[in-house]
Length: 298
Image (cartoon, rainbow, N blue to C red; front, side):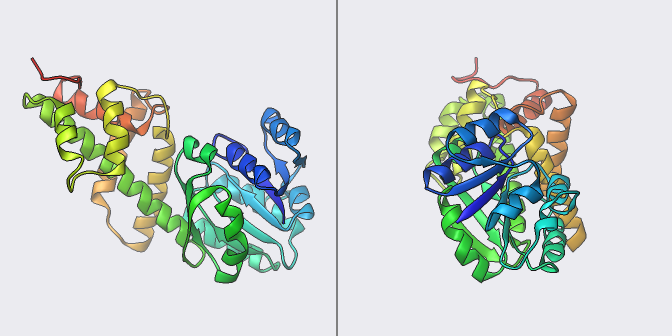
């Protein structure tokens, strides 16, 4: 299958490389000429516009920052829609507003193009390793065709439901992760403030019901104040903005997620938005007047 790949950023570039390694014929497009050059050096072809990408391929994939970029690439001037034809497939792997995904899908469907929304869970290391998790919405028949392509970039590819369902699942994922990180930070600060070694508390509880992948990944970063970005606060804020917008649109209150959204907004105001989301710890340290450390508090 000939595939178009639009968006070769932190996530998109290694994902595209994994498709090339899997034997797929790619046509690529990105604003970053160096990233395009890396894929061309591996055998991909370059294109100048989304329309030019779509004209040459059977499947268009996008990995873009947010809803406006997806709308521009698909519906804008020289966009994918201008090359629409029966049989062309489109899968958006970005994390966007599910209502936007449905609108874009409807516009494409009028021209014979079937769309899947297929956002991913997992940061850059998972993209490099090809172990991302895909949450997919759209028709079963299109999913069956695209699933092997997504499997070349991920370890899990699950169809959740119709169009938009993939992004609903991603929003649920991001809300759960955000609240998990926040309560881990809250609990570790509690331990130290109460005179107990937070590292030992982590060791004691991680094998029980409180244990989670989030805690195992983020507690050590908090204990060492290692906030180099795996997933940046500003990106998580973008996702939580979509969470809150969707929750308000459908009438599903999310007060816990809203609280974490406000904490992340505080961190952005203090210029921490490019740090890893484990830097949520900073908000709790500031409130408690301590700095988290390994070892029993003196």
